[in-house]
Length: 436
Image (cartoon, rainbow, N blue to C red):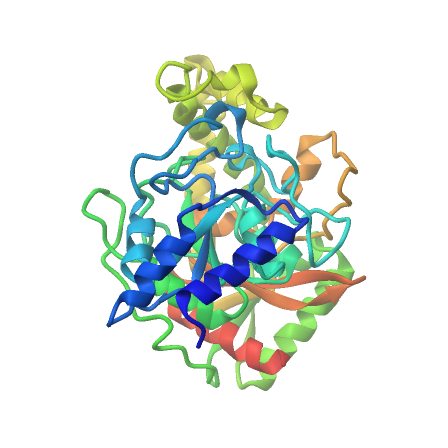
């Protein structure tokens, strides 16, 4: 095993030569931190591993810009709870990764610091909003990274970049120190090159936080309890997924599900009749919550006034949120969205009632080409149709590479019951073994 200094130095050299624009900032104290780990007689679960952090998570002494000119000068004065836990387990923060501005995007193209390249599908978008966190893994620039997932922002780029990504149950991982997109939906989660890496990071960052009212008292030793024996598992497949997904992707996903069946799982058909309603329900919720969250960026306390310097998509969401929040419209739009959210959650939990997990595609279409600007935001939002139900329902979901279509990675999404992380990880581990 290389020392922490050797490991971190290796990645720093790769980052220096890298062309993906995965990082906004490198931790200038990374070697010093690695030396401190090497001196410890007893080391933690992440000992000497190089960890990259999405730029909407506060790391003391580093910029938390949200990839926006709004916060380009903001240096975090404290560590988010997840960062405290990573440092406690001797992980070394190597830098802050690029992202869609304020997590508003599904492509990795809206950053104020330039778009992120996809090393797994040259010339195509890497997905977003956690673009740099996914590409830093795909380009082998770190061991593990953290992203945030509000409607698919971990799972979407994990699929496009061919890496492992995991969105936990809402409340399993503390959000203290995460800069909000939509507080009732946001969750921090890991990216890794394999299931064990993601499970180890989830083990480190999950669990109750006294500073928050939404965190849960749960942590099952995910890496320690990984078990690829899924014989007897019931895996649900959703008939509505096929109707919304490119048939070439569906074909690859069907092959993946067959591999799980060959591992001893039983395949069961389930239904999500209001799947398509998830998209407007999600975005109406996000617009209102994002508008509320950005009122603190008024130019007096943090950086510049957001409306003066932000990009088009961020401004669109602020203006729509402001409009919907008005008294005469909140009942027509926002309250209706909350009603549909309850309906969708009930349908998702009903679909999961008699199965262990649901398996299916992650993104319904292949990533578009970089620079091929999508002018209609509804076309961009459509990337999220298969991922937003997990956020609306608060359930966990993981993604692992299923295969490739036209040389582009596509991800198999595994969703489970609330706090059903272990079964999802076990299914992912079984698939990882079958795919080798």
